[in-house]
Length: 109
Picture 1 (cartoon, rainbow, N blue to C red):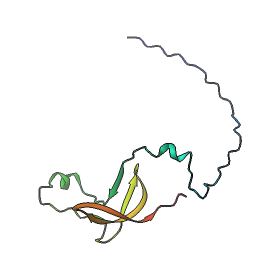
Picture 2 (picture 1 turned 60 degrees about the vertical axis):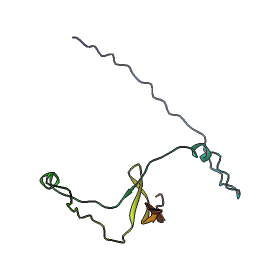
Picture 3 (picture 1 turned 90 degrees about the vertical axis):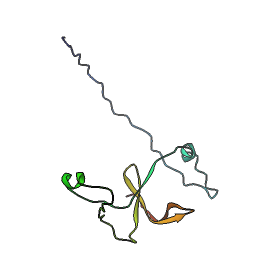
C-alpha cells in the first residue's frame, strides 16, 4: 500500500482583540456568564493519602493487608477537581455515609 502526504501551508496572522474588562458582580450576586455553567456536572475526588510500593509488594497484597498512607490521622484530606487540589477538608459521617467538611479552599495563583 502506498501512502501519499499532501502538505498544506497554514496561514498564520496576528489577531488584535479589544481589551475586555470584567465588571465586578453587583450586590445581588448576578453572574450572567457563570450561570451558563450552573447545570454542568463535574466529578470531585477526595484523596485520603498515597503510598509507594514495589510491584512485588503490590502483587503480594491479600485480603486483610494494610497499606500505610502518607497522611496522619486527623490530617486534612485533599479535594480534587480534574486532578488539581481545589480544597482541603476533614472526613465526616452523614447518615451512615462518608462526607467532607471543607476547611479551606485553594486560591488561584
